[in-house]
Length: 260
Image (cartoon, rainbow, N blue to C red):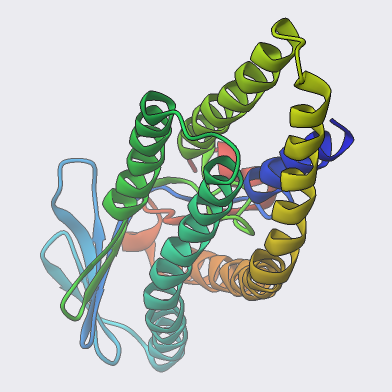
């Protein structure tokens, strides 16, 4: 049972571990090779940046001075660098979470009904990520909303779904153990066998998932720092270009809960 607690802690860490880095998007962002579009709540572009430094706001071409063009080019280059990689990393992160949960659960419980319930929960997690982080050919889309705990790339809604999946798997494990206790004949040996399975699974997770998790955390910390830099670059442009003032796309830190 001691290792069961350790296993649950490990699973929880996939959702909650790492250094906090609050990041939020007020608008959707579509990135293609030559263009960035910022998408409003009605699904229409509120402004777009054409490579290298052409700005169109609500359909109007905005004249820029040299300094503004340099700052726009800096922001555009940063978004082109971050968004496609962020989408790939988001999918890596959720796949790692799903892999770990399936690894623990599949090694302990063979009940088909519980496995199907778990699989449905995990599929909802994966679908939510795919809907928020989309790649279609050479177009990349990130949807609006909070990216709290960007180190794990799971926002509150996805976190709840992962917790549901974890609850399903843990429930199956505990039910199996509870059944053994109720049927005391030979239960001590069978519980000991489950404990051995848990130890074995823990070692396997440490060897296979551990390195991947650490790599993802390092990547995500880099993204966190880049988002902060891009947030500052965007704020400078919004101060300089009045047409951009109403549109605060990136929010980081304590400001993620504000709609400037």
